[in-house]
Image (cartoon, rainbow, N blue to C red; front, side, top):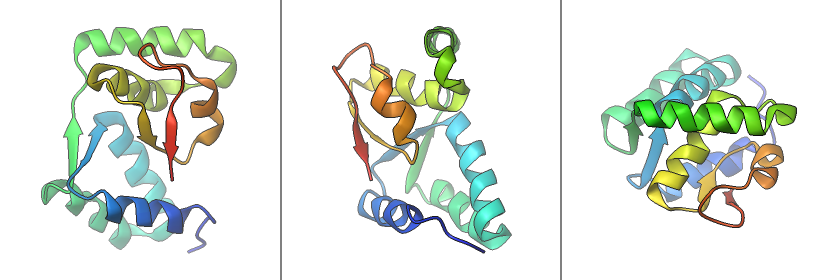
Length: 123
């Protein structure tokens, strides 16, 4: 399967931060779909095992978080931000962190979180 140029960077980032990664639930669904589509079902299973082994912690969104996501989707309608990216912003705000791991540099260089001037983007 073809790998995008950013995939090796993403893999290095995952390895470097294993056990430290906290991810909102909607990100898992999208990531699993992309991994399966680009790398196949065995790679998807490997990704899912990162969750079961505690290398990635999945955090469920609360009711209020969905409200914040709706606000972000509306505020950044021209970007077509969507639930997945809005959940990352909401989660970062909840944890008061400004560093996010994403391949979506386009949106995350534009979006301004409520708790910081801008995001630091990895990889």
